[in-house]
Image 1 (tube, rainbow, N blue to C red):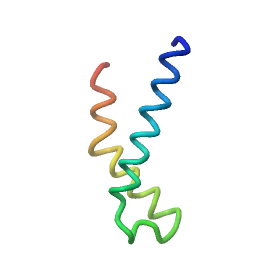
Image 2: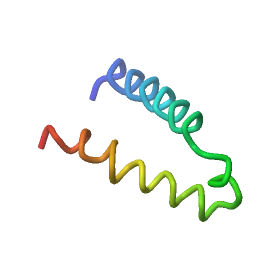
Image 3: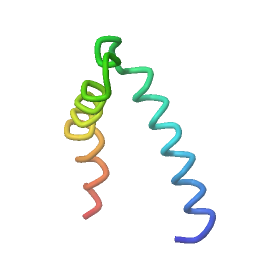
Length: 55
């Protein structure tokens, strides 16, 4: 990847993190385990399949 692509990926990652943060229910913020569980579920259902599509 060139420098511009790396920077763009960082920007997109920041945007994705903001969306995930806004859509994490309050009960998921109880501890690191529930945060991880919620993020894993989002990865399995939404992010992973879309990212893996180009393979």
